[in-house]
Length: 477
Ligand SMILES: Nc1ncnc2c1ncn2[C@@H]1O[C@H](COP(=O)(O)OP(=O)(O)OP(=O)(O)O)[C@@H](O)[C@H]1O
Image 1: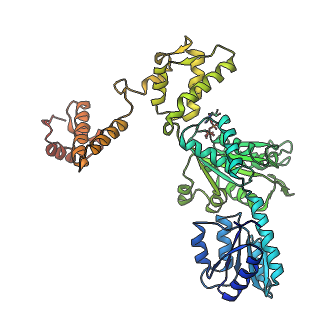
Image 2: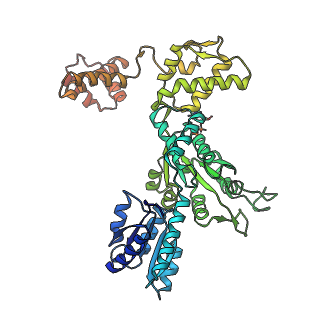
């Protein structure tokens, strides 16, 4: 066993903790001791052991409650439950609760050691760790497949590197078009399942009543129109990876079924009575805040914990503007190749212009824009005027130096650097004055309408005009 393997032992009986610690340390396995499950849980938020040995009966949180919590939050952590020899009921309950093994007390120390070694091996296999050079090699490969020099993207590549060789469930968060599927594919390609299928299914794209048969398949005659037996995506993905996009849109009944498949590794086709066994790695993705959906009650908490083992966050394109020129070049070349036409390139000004846009559709929108350019722009060099009209409208020409937030930031930076204090007292009135004067200009001086535009009550507006000393005489509304 390597030096880093640590086993956590939790028992309210000091002598048991002591015996286990001495025995395991002789085998080179480090131990950390806890007198209550509550203390162990606190520690888990900071670090994780390779395995846990827990007594079943303890004051406070008991072994089964601990097991249940660990199953939800750390499903890859093997837990060995110790219980009195005669307590068959507890033994059964611990297996049902997902215990890795059950150790009857009083135990034979050799048996305890061999169980712990098995648990550690099991843990290593489910979360194999690579060394730093291997991680770096994979990162370098991913760097060629996915464009992203921004620090947030480098973070994503690193995660892919670290997760390579593992079969662990991953939850990818990010807005539509940020490259979630691309990352899921990379995770699959660098996993032990690479030779097996990668199957993607978008929950938001299929009508709700078809999702179950799409996922689990159906038997002939299961419903009107089911003329033949059909294998679902789960079966198609057997041995490989199933990418469930927009998981937040999964209907409640399907969530329940999915949870069962993840727990049992088997399911029934719609209308079927024979269980189908599958070995599928799940990568889920969503643009929604799943915790929020759990709080609202539209996403199952237990399913959330099953999926939320490792989380990868993809930034919006506007949060990594430095990648825009390189992405644009890549998409322009690819589109030209696909359409077998001459490649085009962006003028420096066009590149700057594209870099400043908001890109609500993220990388996908940039990709589509590049296709449009290849088809529609006339010369080899793409000028700002050649861009699709909807993009030209989105940055007003009087903002050549970026957004107002950027301008404000620069202003605050230099004011603070020059030693100004109490800066909000200076800026907030100026800000309000601009807002008020501009709104009044839009309503030809009508205060009632201006207050609506600003989202203030009319009296507030009148008070502010007075406070700020704005020169404005009341117009008839
Ligand atoms: N970093 C990137 N490098 C190169 N191409 C990218 C990158 N990110 C996204 N793309 C491309 O942009 C398009 C959209 O990406 P993808 O389908 O992975 O996004 P998504 O987040 O899964 O979107 P949705 O949630 O809407 O399905 C794809 O054609 C993908 O190849």
